[in-house]
Length: 122
Image 1 (tube, rainbow, N blue to C red):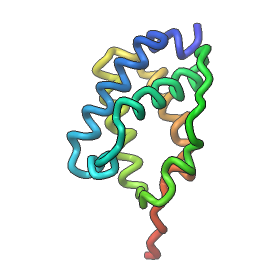
Image 2: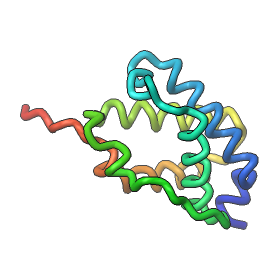
Image 3: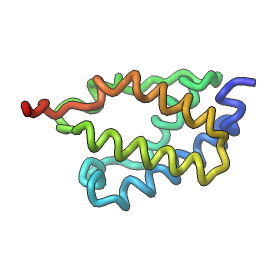
């Protein structure tokens, strides 16, 4: 059984995405990234992207991650905060720990495309 199937296919992924974005827009640290954004459209794109990367029969046709996050000055802390919200969402929905880890690992491979803030020197 694919990760897509274990997550409940498109309906399960859409449910997770909806909850996930509610958490993001309610978090003062990351909510500003979503001001002025067409959230229904973003949710549809996110559902398609997650469906594709988890083995579903969906082809994502949105912008690539680097283009979509360019100029947002997303920090490593912002990225980690968002991943934390995703983990909380999946946990609350009863997703198995191994599957949550697989989703997190998939996201981690894209950190460099999403984190766009200049690195500060120590």
